[in-house]
Amino acid sequence: MWLPKRWLSELVIGSTIIVIFLGSYALSEKHILSVATDLLGFTDQIPFFIFIPHGVRVVAIYLLRERAIFPLLISHFLLYDLFSNMPPTWAYVPLALVGTLSAWLSFELLRWAHTSAYYISDQPKYRVNRIGPPLLAGILAAVINSLLSFAVLFTSDVKYGEIELLLGYIFGDILGLLVLLVLFFSLRYWVDNLRE
Image (cartoon, rainbow, N blue to C red; front, side, top):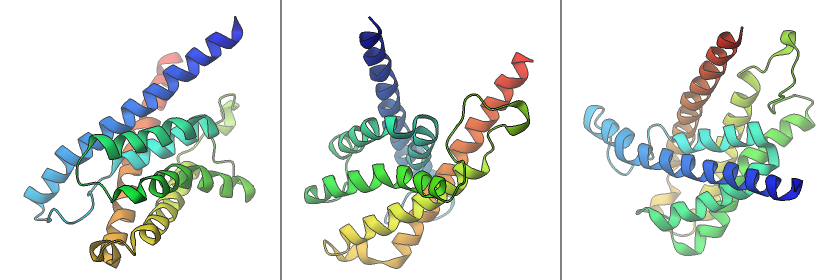
């Protein structure tokens, strides 16, 4: 009976990641981009001002490690299928792999450098999880994701070959990461205070 419960749990967790990822993309696309274009005078050609799905990628890997890879991969494919203004179809697989694995790779690089970046649920009170390591992993993931995505799309169209676009994606990923990490750690702090 343990195995079916485990599979059901993984299905619920994976579905939650997919829904949050796609919902955060819809929020970034509809509301945040419209605020950036209307209030700040940005054009539609720039990347999202605050790209929250990058924060979802990072927080999912931070909490679940490699268990989040498959749901994130499915999220990317659904994203390309459900939304408009997506890259060319030949780039879906490499871009989905880059987007999914960049966060996991950054956490693994930090682990290899002896920095505990993953969430640890049984931390003693004096060694609580801090915002710094996942923030560093997320910034590293934003750079890896943007550079590899830039490399994949560089040959496809002139508009992807602009350095301003690359820097805009890195900046948008980092801002989206900051928003989600601040929300996550604030919520965790609030819940911890309620317990005490």
